[in-house]
Length: 120
Image (cartoon, rainbow, N blue to C red; front, side):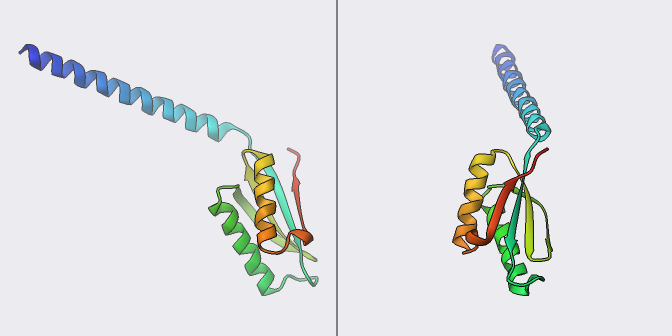
């Protein structure tokens, strides 16, 4: 009987610790979600006024590379006269901008790109 009481006490202690960890995890997730993320805009100049299919495909490729590298979260994209645009949200703007520039360099478009931090 004494062994059963000890076993139940141990199980209750373990359950309490696991619950505390899940509560702390939920708190951390909520705080992370509530933090305002910095927005960064990436513009890549196109060869003509309208983006070519190849330039639109490159835009999608860069978006996938940014997401895959966990550099930023792509919010939206688009294009206008003479450019394609990718808007992202980042946690650490300095590191993210450096990583984005490396991705652009790797795809051969850094020299015709701008990466700017948007004011909130």
